[in-house]
Length: 52
Image (cartoon, rainbow, N blue to C red; front, side, top):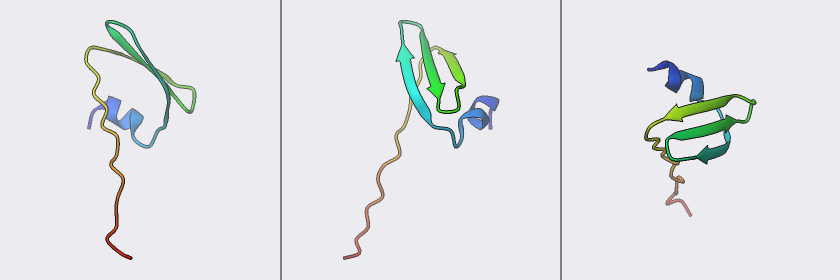
């Protein structure tokens, strides 16, 4: 696991801003992350139950 992954696991992203080359993430604990290049985020899918 990369240091970037370890830093974000379990954290809540409070805000995200993008311009042409950089993405900025503001975490709920006040940490600001600046990322250059392509950023792909996968949102967790809701878990559905077949139980009545």
